Length: 140
Image 1 (cartoon, rainbow, N blue to C red):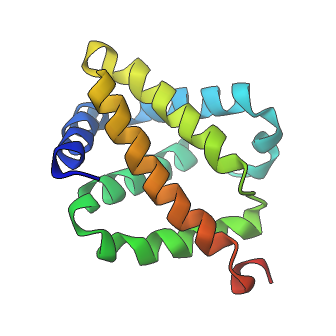
Image 2 (image 1 turned 90 degrees about the vertical axis):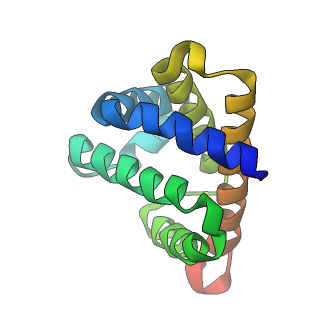
């Protein structure tokens, strides 16, 4: 990711953070619409789950300028998600739901440049997570 892309992701997330609960609701609604097979993977309270999602996104977005700091946490999260039943193919639908949610939340501020920056950020993070999830210790 370029420094400009990181700035775009960080500044656009700052606009979404004040509507975190709404954004999380939109995200999970969209995720379950486009991938209903993942709904059974979520066992707990969805409000709490949404808060965890937005908090995690906040940490990742804040850490984009220091990837070596956030990569180990992302890898650990990916390995944990294997135990919940998350599969490699789920990452694409999560990315799609995330971009859709950002488009809804940001409106006209979700420019093509912002979309590309988010897609690149998610692509980078999800590739790290998929690689970690596919390691032998993750699937054992």
